[in-house]
Image 1: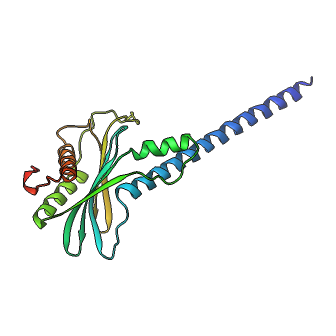
Image 2 (image 1 turned 45 degrees about the vertical axis):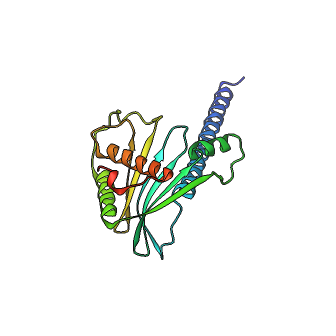
Image 3 (image 1 turned 90 degrees about the vertical axis):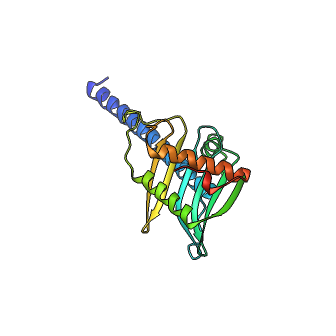
Length: 208
């Protein structure tokens, strides 16, 4: 066989495998992006659904992302001149359920049983909570994990506040610097969630 023909065939094969690999990478990237969008949508739907902006203002949000356990959330909202803490507690893990649906090729909008609890709080408690949220999202802390480690298999928390029309947020790992205020505030929020679920919420019992 002509050497030039052999060389040309080899180049064609290389191009074919390169394009095939690129196509596979692009396909996988699209799938990952699609799953990410689905998880984001499911989280919003179940844990912090949009409020009626004409009557309600969302001040701050705390979301629990446990590993393999149900999610829960806490929101501070204002409605008709009053302030409320709204807690939502799911029976399943949103990320896990969404991923499994994609793995089984039968994803459709999830229906996860959810318990919802709401309690009115005083102006003083609202201000304390808002100060704690703002301190958490703005305070810098030292992460115990090297920056080069991208994956984290464990519980994490997300906090955000709506400040002057902008959302300011931060994610922290349960195992990050224990001296960080966000770790303490996460525990308080988890206690409030449990107390609302059990009907024993009391503004005076939480030490910020």
